[in-house]
Length: 274
Image (cartoon, rainbow, N blue to C red; front, side, top):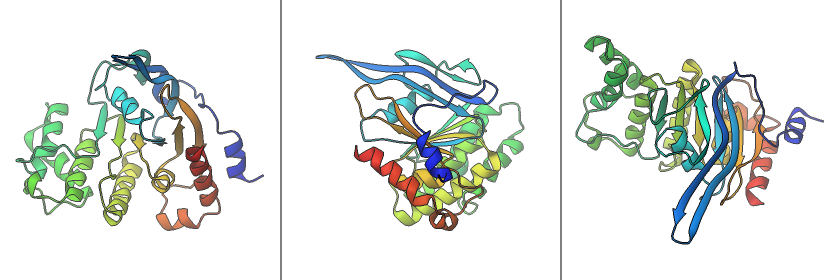
């Protein structure tokens, strides 16, 4: 039995880690929306532990509650039942310990790239000097390839460049957990590939615990240490978890040429088709 077959055999359900390993803990998570026809249960009995410095991708059909779950982790959506904790501390609304990259960059269009990144940096590092804060913002803008666009207004940037600003902004506040809600879903395939490479290059250096929603099976495999599969709603929960055993740092070429790549891919597609 190959490594991947062993992993597939043992992949169902959530792995339980020691408390010292866990960065993010979702425990019996529940989300209900009241409707005129009664309560609609989006998520129920959802349990997931994510380790420090781990990159987890989440896939599932549209409407299964992936974005709802991510927005609850971000503190932007109230929890109906259960709890979410970061390093053992329950979350109480949004906080700088969780950085978010949305599908749409959500920039202030009249501000420059640098000013948009500085918004978060100024809040998170109020005791740093102005020069130090500026250096942090410029460092991450350079990392995403925007060293020539510090002073360009967001409204003058392409969609791909705007998303680069969004990535720089999220990393610049140095969060404990990075949350990504289909950040490349609206981009063409070439730009998408470029930004995947940029994201993983920065992540390899920073090693921030990352949770990313995607509809793209290949993206899920390329980026992740584990791929979490959610069941269809209502009452969605974790349906399966697949360990991705490619060495890091990894390149697209080595991933595509790996013997286990298509076994991983088939496993994810089979889950989505049933």
